[in-house]
Length: 198
Length: 252
Image (cartoon, rainbow over all chains, first blue to last red; front, side, top):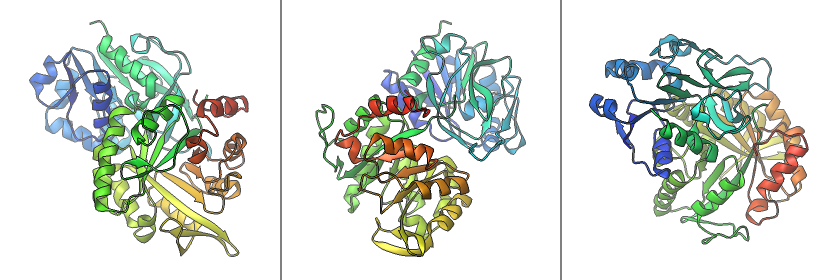
């Protein structure tokens, strides 16, 4: 199976590469349109800031390319947020794959620290990405902006308020949390993504 | 459910080997930091901290190689610290696969390093470790593993660290460290109340109750310990089940 990772200016891509290698996959890190279109699976991971990453994607014509991909695509963390319509972070227009806007956490009380960082639970799980998981399984999050619950939501997490831990529309999948840093549960989710029937 | 309280084993590494001995689990190589980290991860540790206590230049290279092996084999977040003096050190360790870096003396000597790290790599990457001791005039910060007293007070420095953009504070009370009589919960609670970033308690774990106390009385977001885990005095699965029964939200 050929797995491509979108090469752009977001950080912390190597943990995704390591996670795939642990599953016996040698991913290709690339921004070559043909390689991305041809791959069996595409991952769009990373940590970063919405404005500068979106500018980079546009300058390298990766914005249209990602939107037009037909194979299963998995966005992770900033990847998920960039797949939405707009982000409050730097007032950025994003790819618009998911018809929803990304907003910043607003603490209600002192204990609501931002970023939301650490292990939290998944609820309202839907679809093949979460095959074999249970409600309240823990995954690892690091983020200050979130996607509200919407018709594309396939998992929720509660921090300050319930928000979208994962999204899906057609061949596009996305997680706010880091499956590559979420121990055996995360590994199962990545494996489920690789095993999706197309 | 809510964000879980974290349990973090800390491993001291010298020349690529863990320093504190272990009579814990059946490791092929008890001194191998990667194997030990993997065992902790499988037992349910939420994060790991690796501290490089090597002084030499060659030791740094060995440590960086080890960070690469940890990143390749372990699927939970880990922080690395020790000997980080400038942005280039941070970059080297993040490139090797570390999720976060912990800085201590370098931040006290050059507070702007905190801003530089967070501007380049984001707040979540930057953990500031503070070693402090309570004196008659209050809590003071110490440099070089607790050997040199500074003029900075704990609470002012912690506030500054937070304002400069650090993602977390790792607070070690030098009076509590190694005594196994519980964490410095009063100071921890005050830090947690005054700061808007997570606080990791360090120094003083001896019994299961100490973890519960630091989460409740100390309002800590995470608890770090070394010897009680390394010597098998407390097993992580047992600790977590016990904490859960005590009503603490932990990941099981």
